[in-house]
Length: 233
Ligand code: CA
Image (cartoon, rainbow, N blue to C red; front, side, top):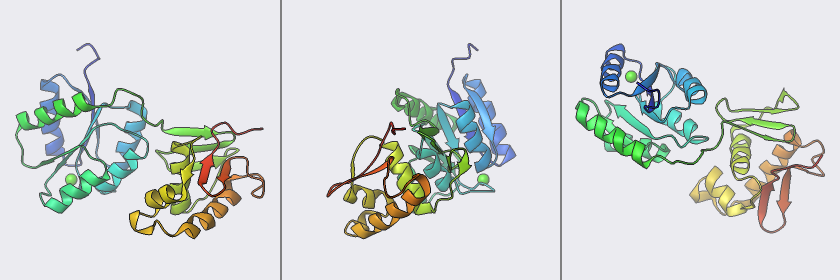
């Protein structure tokens, strides 16, 4: 092996299935790292930057669909779900969360290999969102869902975290009230502009040195909000 073969992250808690996948992948020349829990998977995804993820949905500490959603907050790595759950709604929820494909157990080796080849071909060549972003003294670690300011943890509610992540991943761009509502609260809530105002005010109290004179989270009057990508001073 030259070390340039694609690195695959296998997330699976059943030892038998792990052995089977390991044998399959090795025989085809893939390199792999293995995780038995969602927590291990997140760690390996950030430390090893795999080119493909094979993901079991039933993990001891976290549902695979939730894990997919968390990975998608910062990574575009192709994800193929391998699951015993064969119902249509299971497939839909995994695909909606950001999985690229879905394989129901039991399956044949050649089918898995074919899906992996397709996923790797389709894989984006550009860089995804890095696992951490910094704005002045504010730092967001997407893999840990952790926000710090001057090295101190900032305690955000889930909504505040979603708002900040959305703004950070679009730093420098203006996001309209409507876009923010759709992404954070869902398509049914796009008329609730006051939600955005209230939560932005709360978020400012936590991330701005002087919330009355924000340097980071900027209001674009009548349009929406923007996170400054290069905050002054
Ligand atoms: Ca399992």
